[in-house]
Image 1: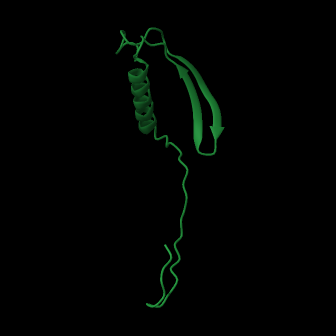
Image 2 (image 1 turned 180 degrees about the horizontal axis):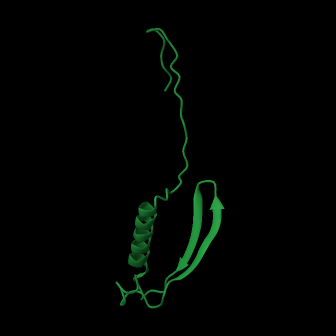
Length: 83
């Protein structure tokens, strides 16, 4: 990225690596020194490139899931439904 955006990225990226494994996440840390006001652009671009690299390598990003089961109960036409 530093080659693509030399005016936005001031130093080489300092990748600290994996900090934590959680049940639905892997916490990574990388520090990128940017020009003032460019941190938002650089952060978005970094995350996009990281996601594309994960996709190429077949690495799935975990996410929490929940199964919801809905059970219908019979009622007569005269009964009101409390909603």
